Length: 76
Image (cartoon, rainbow, N blue to C red; front, side, top):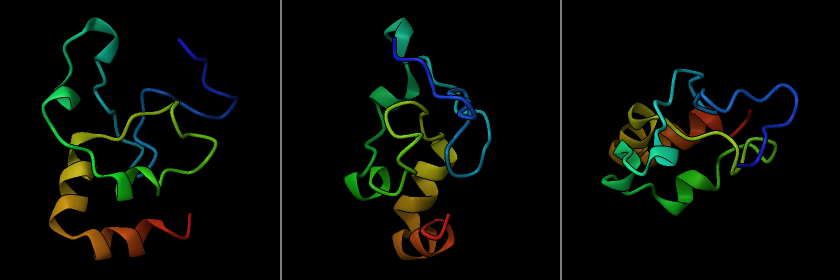
């Protein structure tokens, strides 16, 4: 397990800061059944990349409106 750097809460979505409900370490997580687009992963701030999971709501919001989601979070 990789520790999150100071200021990064691995249990919070890097976009909305809501609980990401990640359970990947248990071997059974919602993210195993939901495709996370590469374009969305590319938007994760570098200090949170591979350290904090995106929540289901943000994955779905990006899938519904990639341009709108990107515009909202790109400048962070």
